[in-house]
Image (cartoon, rainbow, N blue to C red; front, top):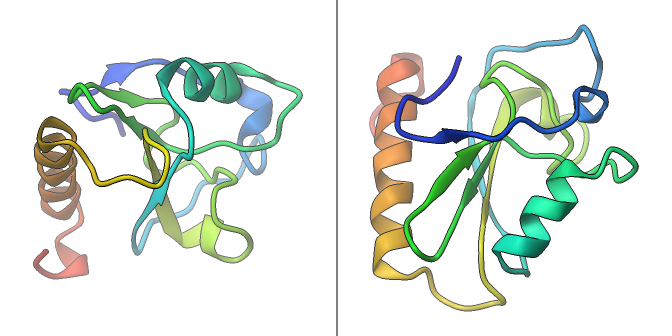
Length: 121
């Protein structure tokens, strides 16, 4: 599943946890990328680096989706990768910008609409 308001910037297929494995998700893990947009985009595009995540949230309010919601990607270790969608937030140990916060909130609301079994945000 893809988010209509996120730019589709697919990561390499080999960075999915398994080429054939998908799994229903149980929630979201929000991460601090500890880096900025250019580095995040280079890292997600590098097929030789195993790190992968579903969404990138940028300080300017931009949002990229790299993998389908159901894909199992490597962002929080096993078994968390099986159960959670990973969102990396641009920045170096700093608060989210207002634009980034609003777009992340929009994404969370959309994800909860798509997964009513999660409950209310």
